[in-house]
Image (tube, rainbow, N blue to C red; front, side, top):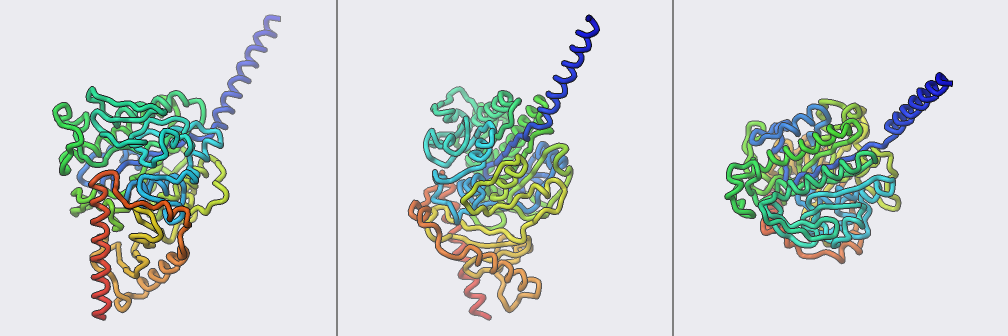
Length: 468
């Protein structure tokens, strides 16, 4: 009888272990999406940046996939709308600082599929205290939900329907980071989505807790680029905290980690990049306004140390996340995104031949800048054509008479791409357009500079055409 009980106990233990193993094997992957604010391609050392310290991002790139050609919209809100919905701004953008309540986000989709969902960091999409929940997030710790106080030292935040103001020298990015880590800890036994749109590295370029003058430096006083390098290093450090927590909880191998910037570095911010001087192009439709870092890391599931030249943009993240989690795509809408999950796994996939952008911070019927581009050339809807591989600041528009066979073929391809988006916008989104004030004077100034640059470029192109 004694041996029978022993055998029964062993059998029960083995069965318990088997079911625990099966449960772990069947657990759907977690997703962590980190969006770094005003963070251009030149900010990451692994990309060739020479001005900043990004050891965590570099290590994640070395152990995962690093994209060389990820492009987004030139400004914060336009990119966030594309990223969350998988659609071009042409289809569903209303105006700056707003996400239309009719839209479905990746959080809605994953929540409906049984995921625990959370957003921490910067909101900037209006819709009040109920907005994050409406768009699929179970909980949140956010800045700029229904007001715009300081975001760094002594911030004002909204946490799950409550307004919270800090006055003892607390650092906003630390607070939302701690909330993100707590969410992961609480939800470690269920599949979860953490969307983490950081407040860093947006101006004002204030001191961070790692800056020697943090205690004495005033908040919201970051003139010039004095502390920008500190902010980049701190953003990298916060990503490191996130990775360390996933490792501590033994979740790394079951978590897809995606990282990208939301637009180019703050307008005019100087950096060294691959042996040259560059300046941040936020708000501009040039390469330095749209080209951002993109890194994917998922040990054992995505290729390690792979550098991909494939074109991707913000709309591609929703279908990629849905593919990784086996979540159905939304029905009744036209997605512009294309999953790059096959490339992450080491397969060829279906790389894009071109990317399309419709950009107007105010919304409205027409774009301030509409263009299609590939890795070498960019064509605007007004006819301006550039060799952006050689002229990334778009100083010298090309004329038809000077095009070789390769450039002519590229232009024809991009013309066909633009034709796919011809026709009027949906009147629902056009009617809600509002004049662009920006989230700050800096953003408003960027938009004005972008308009001036576009007008000058058009004049240059017209003069060159007249000369031919």
